[in-house]
Length: 509
Image (cartoon, rainbow, N blue to C red; front, top):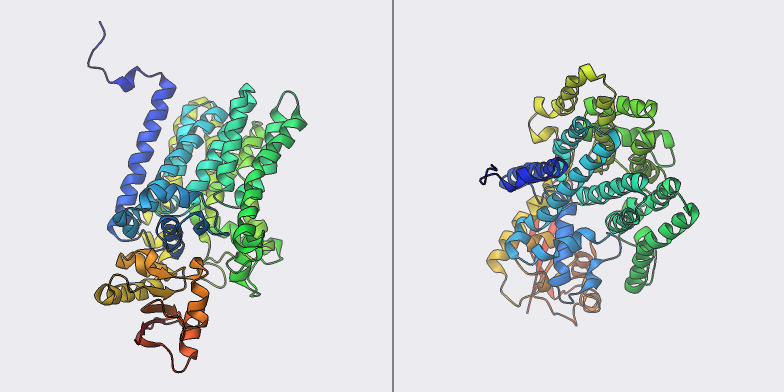
Protein backbone atom coordinates (compact mmCIF):
# COMPACT_ATOMS: atom_id res chain seq x y z
CA UNK A 1 0.00 0.00 0.00
CA UNK A 2 1.37 3.41 -0.95
CA UNK A 3 2.03 5.99 1.67
CA UNK A 4 -0.44 8.78 0.99
CA UNK A 5 1.62 11.16 3.07
CA UNK A 6 4.66 10.89 0.80
CA UNK A 7 6.10 14.16 -0.47
CA UNK A 8 5.32 14.94 -4.12
CA UNK A 9 9.03 15.51 -4.57
CA UNK A 10 9.76 11.88 -3.69
CA UNK A 11 7.57 10.70 -6.58
CA UNK A 12 9.74 12.44 -9.15
CA UNK A 13 12.32 10.41 -11.09
CA UNK A 14 15.83 10.47 -9.63
CA UNK A 15 17.27 13.01 -12.13
CA UNK A 16 14.33 15.34 -11.49
CA UNK A 17 14.86 14.99 -7.75
CA UNK A 18 18.51 15.86 -8.24
CA UNK A 19 17.66 18.97 -10.22
CA UNK A 20 15.06 20.03 -7.65
CA UNK A 21 17.56 19.52 -4.83
CA UNK A 22 20.18 21.54 -6.69
CA UNK A 23 17.77 24.42 -7.37
CA UNK A 24 16.57 24.53 -3.76
CA UNK A 25 20.12 24.32 -2.38
CA UNK A 26 21.43 27.09 -4.65
CA UNK A 27 18.43 29.29 -3.86
CA UNK A 28 18.91 28.93 -0.11
CA UNK A 29 22.65 29.49 -0.43
CA UNK A 30 22.47 32.69 -2.45
CA UNK A 31 19.51 33.99 -0.43
CA UNK A 32 21.45 33.53 2.80
CA UNK A 33 24.54 35.18 1.36
CA UNK A 34 22.52 38.08 -0.08
CA UNK A 35 20.91 38.60 3.34
CA UNK A 36 24.39 38.77 4.87
CA UNK A 37 25.45 41.37 2.27
CA UNK A 38 22.22 43.34 2.73
CA UNK A 39 22.52 43.44 6.52
CA UNK A 40 25.99 44.93 6.28
CA UNK A 41 25.08 47.48 3.64
CA UNK A 42 27.40 46.09 0.95
CA UNK A 43 24.91 45.83 -1.93
CA UNK A 44 25.66 49.28 -3.32
CA UNK A 45 29.36 49.46 -2.51
CA UNK A 46 30.32 48.96 -6.14
CA UNK A 47 29.89 52.12 -8.21
CA UNK A 48 28.94 50.06 -11.25
CA UNK A 49 26.20 48.35 -9.21
CA UNK A 50 24.65 51.73 -8.38
CA UNK A 51 24.93 52.80 -12.01
CA UNK A 52 23.30 49.59 -13.30
CA UNK A 53 20.44 50.09 -10.87
CA UNK A 54 19.91 53.73 -11.86
CA UNK A 55 20.15 52.96 -15.57
CA UNK A 56 17.31 50.51 -15.14
CA UNK A 57 15.29 52.94 -13.01
CA UNK A 58 15.74 55.76 -15.54
CA UNK A 59 13.82 53.75 -18.16
CA UNK A 60 10.73 54.28 -15.99
CA UNK A 61 11.69 57.30 -13.88
CA UNK A 62 13.13 60.14 -15.96
CA UNK A 63 12.19 63.46 -17.47
CA UNK A 64 12.19 61.57 -20.78
CA UNK A 65 11.45 57.94 -19.81
CA UNK A 66 11.67 55.15 -22.33
CA UNK A 67 14.14 52.73 -23.85
CA UNK A 68 16.39 55.53 -25.08
CA UNK A 69 17.61 55.58 -21.47
CA UNK A 70 19.22 52.15 -21.98
CA UNK A 71 22.30 53.90 -23.33
CA UNK A 72 24.86 52.73 -25.85
CA UNK A 73 27.79 51.23 -23.91
CA UNK A 74 26.49 48.93 -21.19
CA UNK A 75 24.51 46.08 -22.68
CA UNK A 76 20.93 46.00 -21.38
CA UNK A 77 19.98 42.53 -20.13
CA UNK A 78 20.56 43.25 -16.41
CA UNK A 79 18.71 46.57 -16.72
CA UNK A 80 15.74 44.84 -18.35
CA UNK A 81 15.72 42.00 -15.81
CA UNK A 82 15.72 44.57 -13.02
CA UNK A 83 12.77 46.56 -14.42
CA UNK A 84 9.98 44.67 -12.60
CA UNK A 85 11.64 45.39 -9.26
CA UNK A 86 13.36 48.75 -9.61
CA UNK A 87 10.11 50.69 -9.79
CA UNK A 88 9.59 49.87 -6.11
CA UNK A 89 11.30 52.66 -4.15
CA UNK A 90 12.44 50.43 -1.29
CA UNK A 91 13.90 47.78 -3.60
CA UNK A 92 15.60 50.53 -5.62
CA UNK A 93 17.16 52.43 -2.74
CA UNK A 94 18.34 49.30 -0.95
CA UNK A 95 19.72 47.74 -4.14
CA UNK A 96 17.64 44.60 -3.72
CA UNK A 97 16.00 45.32 -7.08
CA UNK A 98 19.28 44.25 -8.65
CA UNK A 99 19.97 41.46 -6.16
CA UNK A 100 16.87 39.50 -7.18
CA UNK A 101 17.72 38.96 -10.88
CA UNK A 102 21.45 38.49 -10.18
CA UNK A 103 20.70 35.82 -7.56
CA UNK A 104 18.20 34.09 -9.86
CA UNK A 105 20.85 33.94 -12.58
CA UNK A 106 23.28 32.38 -10.08
CA UNK A 107 20.76 29.59 -9.50
CA UNK A 108 20.31 29.08 -13.25
CA UNK A 109 24.08 29.05 -13.85
CA UNK A 110 24.77 26.59 -11.05
CA UNK A 111 21.98 24.25 -12.12
CA UNK A 112 23.04 24.22 -15.77
CA UNK A 113 26.71 23.67 -14.92
CA UNK A 114 25.63 20.75 -12.71
CA UNK A 115 23.62 19.23 -15.58
CA UNK A 116 26.48 19.86 -18.01
CA UNK A 117 28.91 18.15 -15.63
CA UNK A 118 26.53 15.22 -15.16
CA UNK A 119 26.32 14.84 -18.94
CA UNK A 120 30.08 15.22 -19.49
CA UNK A 121 31.37 13.02 -16.67
CA UNK A 122 28.40 10.62 -16.47
CA UNK A 123 28.63 10.58 -12.68
CA UNK A 124 26.48 12.36 -10.12
CA UNK A 125 29.47 12.52 -7.76
CA UNK A 126 31.59 14.43 -10.29
CA UNK A 127 28.69 16.79 -11.02
CA UNK A 128 28.27 17.39 -7.29
CA UNK A 129 31.97 18.28 -7.01
CA UNK A 130 31.56 20.80 -9.84
CA UNK A 131 28.48 22.25 -8.17
CA UNK A 132 30.22 22.65 -4.81
CA UNK A 133 33.38 24.19 -6.30
CA UNK A 134 31.25 26.60 -8.32
CA UNK A 135 28.69 27.64 -5.74
CA UNK A 136 30.77 27.96 -2.58
CA UNK A 137 33.05 30.71 -3.84
CA UNK A 138 32.44 33.98 -1.92
CA UNK A 139 33.57 36.18 -4.80
CA UNK A 140 30.91 34.73 -7.09
CA UNK A 141 28.32 34.77 -4.31
CA UNK A 142 29.05 38.43 -3.67
CA UNK A 143 28.73 39.34 -7.35
CA UNK A 144 25.49 37.32 -7.44
CA UNK A 145 24.07 39.33 -4.53
CA UNK A 146 24.50 42.78 -6.08
CA UNK A 147 23.43 44.46 -9.37
CA UNK A 148 26.36 43.23 -11.47
CA UNK A 149 26.46 41.22 -14.70
CA UNK A 150 28.81 38.33 -13.82
CA UNK A 151 26.16 35.86 -12.69
CA UNK A 152 23.86 37.02 -15.50
CA UNK A 153 26.50 36.22 -18.09
CA UNK A 154 27.39 32.92 -16.44
CA UNK A 155 23.72 31.89 -16.65
CA UNK A 156 23.78 32.40 -20.42
CA UNK A 157 27.16 30.68 -20.73
CA UNK A 158 25.98 27.65 -18.76
CA UNK A 159 22.80 27.34 -20.83
CA UNK A 160 24.80 27.54 -24.07
CA UNK A 161 27.28 24.98 -22.75
CA UNK A 162 24.52 22.55 -21.81
CA UNK A 163 22.83 23.06 -25.19
CA UNK A 164 26.09 22.20 -26.99
CA UNK A 165 26.49 18.99 -25.01
CA UNK A 166 22.88 17.91 -25.46
CA UNK A 167 22.92 18.69 -29.19
CA UNK A 168 26.03 16.57 -29.65
CA UNK A 169 24.33 13.64 -27.91
CA UNK A 170 20.86 13.89 -29.46
CA UNK A 171 21.10 16.03 -32.63
CA UNK A 172 17.75 17.53 -31.66
CA UNK A 173 17.09 20.98 -33.11
CA UNK A 174 15.59 22.28 -29.90
CA UNK A 175 19.09 22.36 -28.41
CA UNK A 176 20.30 24.38 -31.36
CA UNK A 177 17.49 26.87 -30.66
CA UNK A 178 18.36 26.77 -26.97
CA UNK A 179 21.98 27.61 -27.80
CA UNK A 180 20.89 30.46 -30.06
CA UNK A 181 18.70 31.96 -27.33
CA UNK A 182 21.56 31.62 -24.84
CA UNK A 183 23.87 33.39 -27.29
CA UNK A 184 21.38 36.25 -27.62
CA UNK A 185 21.19 36.51 -23.85
CA UNK A 186 24.98 36.56 -23.45
CA UNK A 187 25.33 39.10 -26.25
CA UNK A 188 22.86 41.37 -24.47
CA UNK A 189 24.82 41.04 -21.23
CA UNK A 190 28.54 41.40 -21.95
CA UNK A 191 30.69 41.80 -25.04
CA UNK A 192 32.24 38.44 -24.22
CA UNK A 193 29.05 37.04 -25.74
CA UNK A 194 29.86 38.64 -29.09
CA UNK A 195 33.29 37.03 -29.04
CA UNK A 196 31.79 33.59 -28.38
CA UNK A 197 29.34 33.63 -31.32
CA UNK A 198 31.59 32.03 -33.98
CA UNK A 199 32.98 29.51 -31.47
CA UNK A 200 29.53 28.35 -30.39
CA UNK A 201 28.54 28.09 -34.05
CA UNK A 202 31.68 26.05 -34.76
CA UNK A 203 31.00 23.70 -31.82
CA UNK A 204 27.46 23.11 -33.07
CA UNK A 205 28.66 22.58 -36.64
CA UNK A 206 31.41 20.11 -35.68
CA UNK A 207 28.97 17.91 -33.77
CA UNK A 208 26.22 18.05 -36.39
CA UNK A 209 25.63 14.92 -38.42
CA UNK A 210 24.66 16.76 -41.61
CA UNK A 211 24.63 20.27 -43.08
CA UNK A 212 27.53 21.40 -40.90
CA UNK A 213 28.38 24.52 -42.83
CA UNK A 214 24.72 25.54 -43.07
CA UNK A 215 24.40 25.25 -39.30
CA UNK A 216 27.56 27.32 -38.81
CA UNK A 217 26.45 30.17 -41.09
CA UNK A 218 22.82 30.16 -39.97
CA UNK A 219 23.84 30.24 -36.32
CA UNK A 220 26.32 33.07 -36.90
CA UNK A 221 23.70 35.04 -38.85
CA UNK A 222 21.02 34.52 -36.21
CA UNK A 223 23.27 35.23 -33.23
CA UNK A 224 24.81 38.20 -35.02
CA UNK A 225 21.45 40.00 -35.02
CA UNK A 226 22.07 41.17 -31.44
CA UNK A 227 25.38 42.96 -32.17
CA UNK A 228 23.81 44.51 -35.28
CA UNK A 229 20.79 45.73 -33.30
CA UNK A 230 23.04 47.16 -30.60
CA UNK A 231 25.08 49.06 -33.17
CA UNK A 232 21.84 50.33 -34.70
CA UNK A 233 20.81 51.52 -31.23
CA UNK A 234 24.12 53.39 -30.91
CA UNK A 235 23.63 55.01 -34.30
CA UNK A 236 20.05 56.01 -33.39
CA UNK A 237 21.03 57.60 -30.10
CA UNK A 238 24.40 59.19 -30.92
CA UNK A 239 24.88 58.99 -34.68
CA UNK A 240 27.80 56.61 -34.07
CA UNK A 241 27.20 52.88 -34.45
CA UNK A 242 30.49 52.20 -32.66
CA UNK A 243 29.81 54.48 -29.71
CA UNK A 244 30.45 51.55 -27.36
CA UNK A 245 33.97 51.28 -28.81
CA UNK A 246 35.07 54.90 -29.19
CA UNK A 247 32.33 57.04 -27.62
CA UNK A 248 32.80 59.28 -24.56
CA UNK A 249 31.72 56.54 -22.13
CA UNK A 250 33.57 53.64 -23.76
CA UNK A 251 36.41 51.77 -22.08
CA UNK A 252 38.85 53.44 -24.47
CA UNK A 253 37.65 56.91 -23.48
CA UNK A 254 37.75 56.09 -19.76
CA UNK A 255 41.29 54.73 -20.01
CA UNK A 256 42.49 57.41 -22.41
CA UNK A 257 46.13 57.26 -23.42
CA UNK A 258 47.34 56.13 -20.00
CA UNK A 259 49.56 53.05 -20.27
CA UNK A 260 48.97 50.04 -18.05
CA UNK A 261 50.54 46.59 -17.57
CA UNK A 262 49.60 44.23 -20.37
CA UNK A 263 48.84 46.82 -23.04
CA UNK A 264 50.28 45.38 -26.29
CA UNK A 265 52.17 42.80 -24.23
CA UNK A 266 50.71 39.29 -24.36
CA UNK A 267 52.87 37.90 -21.57
CA UNK A 268 51.94 40.70 -19.17
CA UNK A 269 48.28 40.55 -20.20
CA UNK A 270 48.17 36.81 -19.45
CA UNK A 271 50.03 37.32 -16.18
CA UNK A 272 47.66 39.97 -14.86
CA UNK A 273 44.58 38.07 -15.93
CA UNK A 274 45.84 34.84 -14.36
CA UNK A 275 46.54 36.68 -11.12
CA UNK A 276 42.98 38.06 -11.10
CA UNK A 277 41.69 34.53 -11.70
CA UNK A 278 43.87 33.17 -8.89
CA UNK A 279 42.59 35.78 -6.46
CA UNK A 280 38.98 35.02 -7.46
CA UNK A 281 39.32 31.23 -7.35
CA UNK A 282 42.12 30.61 -4.86
CA UNK A 283 45.28 28.58 -5.52
CA UNK A 284 43.82 25.18 -4.55
CA UNK A 285 41.00 25.34 -7.10
CA UNK A 286 43.28 26.57 -9.88
CA UNK A 287 45.67 23.66 -9.29
CA UNK A 288 42.73 21.22 -9.17
CA UNK A 289 41.35 22.75 -12.37
CA UNK A 290 44.70 22.40 -14.15
CA UNK A 291 44.97 18.75 -13.12
CA UNK A 292 41.36 18.25 -14.17
CA UNK A 293 42.08 19.72 -17.59
CA UNK A 294 44.94 17.23 -18.03
CA UNK A 295 42.63 14.41 -16.97
CA UNK A 296 39.99 15.63 -19.42
CA UNK A 297 42.59 15.57 -22.20
CA UNK A 298 43.44 11.92 -21.53
CA UNK A 299 39.77 10.96 -21.28
CA UNK A 300 38.88 12.77 -24.54
CA UNK A 301 36.75 15.39 -22.80
CA UNK A 302 39.02 18.34 -23.42
CA UNK A 303 36.71 19.85 -26.03
CA UNK A 304 33.99 20.42 -23.43
CA UNK A 305 36.44 21.86 -20.89
CA UNK A 306 38.18 23.94 -23.56
CA UNK A 307 34.95 25.79 -24.31
CA UNK A 308 35.10 27.41 -20.88
CA UNK A 309 38.62 28.74 -21.59
CA UNK A 310 37.34 30.95 -24.40
CA UNK A 311 36.05 33.69 -22.09
CA UNK A 312 39.37 33.96 -20.18
CA UNK A 313 41.08 34.20 -23.59
CA UNK A 314 38.76 37.09 -24.45
CA UNK A 315 39.85 38.98 -21.33
CA UNK A 316 43.54 38.45 -22.06
CA UNK A 317 42.92 39.83 -25.54
CA UNK A 318 40.99 42.78 -24.07
CA UNK A 319 43.88 43.65 -21.75
CA UNK A 320 46.31 43.43 -24.65
CA UNK A 321 44.35 45.25 -27.34
CA UNK A 322 41.22 46.97 -26.03
CA UNK A 323 42.40 49.41 -23.34
CA UNK A 324 40.80 47.29 -20.62
CA UNK A 325 43.27 47.03 -17.73
CA UNK A 326 43.13 44.74 -14.73
CA UNK A 327 44.84 45.88 -11.54
CA UNK A 328 45.41 43.50 -8.65
CA UNK A 329 46.85 44.27 -5.21
CA UNK A 330 49.65 41.71 -5.62
CA UNK A 331 51.15 43.27 -8.77
CA UNK A 332 52.09 46.84 -9.70
CA UNK A 333 50.36 49.33 -9.31
CA UNK A 334 49.06 47.32 -6.29
CA UNK A 335 45.44 48.41 -6.58
CA UNK A 336 42.03 46.99 -7.43
CA UNK A 337 40.36 47.37 -10.83
CA UNK A 338 38.31 44.88 -12.88
CA UNK A 339 39.37 42.00 -10.63
CA UNK A 340 35.94 40.41 -11.18
CA UNK A 341 36.97 39.43 -14.71
CA UNK A 342 38.90 36.58 -13.08
CA UNK A 343 35.54 34.88 -12.37
CA UNK A 344 35.65 33.42 -15.90
CA UNK A 345 38.85 31.51 -15.09
CA UNK A 346 37.27 30.38 -11.82
CA UNK A 347 34.28 28.92 -13.72
CA UNK A 348 36.65 26.94 -15.94
CA UNK A 349 38.56 25.58 -12.93
CA UNK A 350 35.34 24.64 -11.10
CA UNK A 351 34.09 22.61 -14.07
CA UNK A 352 37.47 21.00 -14.76
CA UNK A 353 37.55 19.83 -11.13
CA UNK A 354 34.90 17.29 -12.09
CA UNK A 355 37.27 15.72 -14.62
CA UNK A 356 39.84 15.13 -11.89
CA UNK A 357 37.37 13.32 -9.64
CA UNK A 358 36.03 11.38 -12.61
CA UNK A 359 39.54 10.09 -13.31
CA UNK A 360 39.97 8.63 -9.83
CA UNK A 361 39.91 4.81 -9.57
CA UNK A 362 36.58 3.39 -8.41
CA UNK A 363 38.01 2.25 -5.08
CA UNK A 364 39.17 5.81 -4.33
CA UNK A 365 36.05 7.74 -5.22
CA UNK A 366 35.74 8.92 -1.62
CA UNK A 367 38.76 11.11 -2.33
CA UNK A 368 36.45 13.18 -4.50
CA UNK A 369 35.04 14.66 -1.30
CA UNK A 370 38.41 16.29 -0.69
CA UNK A 371 38.21 18.34 -3.89
CA UNK A 372 35.44 20.77 -2.87
CA UNK A 373 36.94 20.94 0.64
CA UNK A 374 40.29 21.99 -0.80
CA UNK A 375 38.63 24.47 -3.16
CA UNK A 376 36.95 26.33 -0.30
CA UNK A 377 39.92 26.07 2.09
CA UNK A 378 41.14 29.64 1.39
CA UNK A 379 37.74 31.03 2.32
CA UNK A 380 37.18 28.80 5.38
CA UNK A 381 40.57 29.73 6.83
CA UNK A 382 39.91 33.43 6.13
CA UNK A 383 36.23 34.07 6.76
CA UNK A 384 36.42 37.87 6.63
CA UNK A 385 35.27 39.72 3.46
CA UNK A 386 38.68 41.40 3.56
CA UNK A 387 39.98 38.29 1.78
CA UNK A 388 37.36 38.33 -1.00
CA UNK A 389 39.05 40.19 -3.83
CA UNK A 390 35.81 41.31 -5.50
CA UNK A 391 34.35 42.65 -2.25
CA UNK A 392 37.67 44.31 -1.45
CA UNK A 393 37.68 46.13 -4.78
CA UNK A 394 34.17 47.46 -4.19
CA UNK A 395 35.11 48.55 -0.68
CA UNK A 396 38.42 50.22 -1.58
CA UNK A 397 37.24 52.01 -4.71
CA UNK A 398 34.06 53.40 -3.16
CA UNK A 399 35.41 55.04 0.00
CA UNK A 400 35.21 58.59 -1.36
CA UNK A 401 32.00 58.02 -3.29
CA UNK A 402 30.22 56.59 -0.27
CA UNK A 403 31.39 59.51 1.87
CA UNK A 404 30.11 62.25 -0.42
CA UNK A 405 26.97 60.29 -1.30
CA UNK A 406 26.08 60.10 2.39
CA UNK A 407 26.79 63.80 3.04
CA UNK A 408 24.96 65.05 -0.06
CA UNK A 409 21.93 62.81 0.50
CA UNK A 410 21.57 64.13 4.05
CA UNK A 411 21.75 67.70 2.74
CA UNK A 412 19.13 67.09 0.06
CA UNK A 413 16.84 65.25 2.47
CA UNK A 414 16.89 68.33 4.69
CA UNK A 415 16.67 71.02 2.00
CA UNK A 416 15.13 69.66 -1.21
CA UNK A 417 11.44 70.36 -1.78
CA UNK A 418 9.27 68.64 -4.40
CA UNK A 419 9.49 70.45 -7.71
CA UNK A 420 12.86 72.11 -7.05
CA UNK A 421 14.77 70.09 -9.63
CA UNK A 422 18.49 69.24 -9.77
CA UNK A 423 20.99 69.98 -12.53
CA UNK A 424 23.69 67.32 -12.56
CA UNK A 425 25.86 64.94 -14.53
CA UNK A 426 24.51 61.39 -14.41
CA UNK A 427 26.67 58.44 -13.36
CA UNK A 428 28.02 58.30 -9.82
CA UNK A 429 26.12 61.41 -8.75
CA UNK A 430 22.80 59.70 -9.44
CA UNK A 431 23.58 57.50 -6.45
CA UNK A 432 22.87 60.54 -4.27
CA UNK A 433 19.27 60.63 -5.47
CA UNK A 434 18.95 56.89 -4.83
CA UNK A 435 20.31 57.31 -1.30
CA UNK A 436 18.04 60.31 -0.61
CA UNK A 437 15.02 58.54 -2.15
CA UNK A 438 14.48 61.34 -4.64
CA UNK A 439 13.02 60.39 -8.05
CA UNK A 440 15.43 60.46 -10.98
CA UNK A 441 12.92 62.57 -12.91
CA UNK A 442 13.82 65.40 -10.53
CA UNK A 443 17.22 65.60 -12.24
CA UNK A 444 18.26 67.26 -15.47
CA UNK A 445 21.30 65.48 -16.91
CA UNK A 446 22.98 64.52 -20.19
CA UNK A 447 20.40 61.78 -20.77
CA UNK A 448 17.63 64.39 -20.93
CA UNK A 449 18.78 66.29 -24.00
CA UNK A 450 17.69 68.79 -25.38
CA UNK A 451 17.05 70.47 -22.00
CA UNK A 452 20.45 69.65 -20.50
CA UNK A 453 22.67 71.49 -22.97
CA UNK A 454 21.01 74.91 -22.59
CA UNK A 455 21.10 74.48 -18.81
CA UNK A 456 24.88 74.08 -18.70
CA UNK A 457 25.83 76.43 -21.54
CA UNK A 458 23.44 79.31 -20.89
CA UNK A 459 22.79 79.22 -17.18
CA UNK A 460 22.25 82.97 -16.97
CA UNK A 461 19.33 82.72 -19.37
CA UNK A 462 18.02 79.26 -18.61
CA UNK A 463 17.36 78.32 -14.97
CA UNK A 464 15.04 75.35 -14.80
CA UNK A 465 16.57 73.76 -11.68
CA UNK A 466 16.86 75.16 -8.15
CA UNK A 467 19.83 72.93 -7.29
CA UNK A 468 22.95 71.74 -9.08
CA UNK A 469 25.28 68.92 -8.00
CA UNK A 470 28.70 68.43 -9.53
CA UNK A 471 32.06 66.80 -9.06
CA UNK A 472 34.67 69.51 -9.31
CA UNK A 473 35.89 69.71 -12.90
CA UNK A 474 32.90 68.10 -14.61
CA UNK A 475 30.79 69.96 -17.18
CA UNK A 476 28.30 71.27 -14.61
CA UNK A 477 30.95 72.45 -12.15
CA UNK A 478 33.08 74.07 -14.85
CA UNK A 479 30.18 76.04 -16.26
CA UNK A 480 28.71 77.21 -12.98
CA UNK A 481 32.05 78.29 -11.47
CA UNK A 482 33.28 80.01 -14.64
CA UNK A 483 30.36 82.43 -14.92
CA UNK A 484 30.75 85.65 -12.98
CA UNK A 485 28.31 86.61 -11.70
CA UNK A 486 26.61 83.22 -11.71
CA UNK A 487 22.95 82.41 -11.27
CA UNK A 488 24.05 79.76 -8.77
CA UNK A 489 26.01 80.01 -5.54
CA UNK A 490 28.05 77.26 -3.94
CA UNK A 491 26.36 76.12 -0.71
CA UNK A 492 28.14 72.86 0.13
CA UNK A 493 31.51 71.27 -0.56
CA UNK A 494 32.33 67.71 0.40
CA UNK A 495 36.07 66.99 0.31
CA UNK A 496 37.33 63.42 0.32
CA UNK A 497 40.76 61.85 -0.07
CA UNK A 498 41.97 60.98 -3.58
CA UNK A 499 38.78 62.19 -5.32
CA UNK A 500 37.38 65.44 -6.71
CA UNK A 501 35.33 67.37 -4.21
CA UNK A 502 31.56 67.26 -4.51
CA UNK A 503 29.84 70.62 -4.94
CA UNK A 504 26.19 71.55 -4.40
CA UNK A 505 24.92 74.83 -5.84
CA UNK A 506 21.67 76.68 -5.19
CA UNK A 507 19.85 79.02 -7.55
CA UNK A 508 20.14 82.58 -6.19
CA UNK A 509 16.66 83.73 -7.21
